[in-house]
Image (cartoon, rainbow, N blue to C red; front, side, top):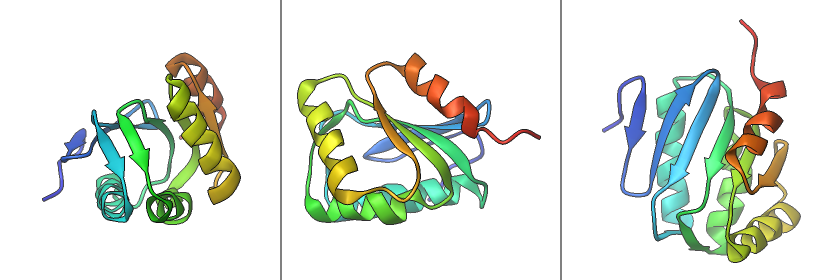
Length: 130
């Protein structure tokens, strides 16, 4: 079951759209394997209803990933996105994120930030003007 227009939540993530940006937040203690990656990407794409957005992805709830999950997110996870700003604050997550960028090579511009403000500043150039 997919959510209505303003907010969506499943066992692994929450997402919402505000001021032209899709906010995506992984829930606490989430491990991203292929199954989780497929579920969150499918839900996100349905939620967006064929519209493309820059994405602020808060990964502070992620405790780990596997290669299949990272690879899926790097390729299929970028569908209907202009750019992705990953927000991480713990050293381990910064290491995982850096590894993800270097090895999995996402198909859209992707950067890592330690603050939401810096991530939003990066994404502002990717917001479509109506």
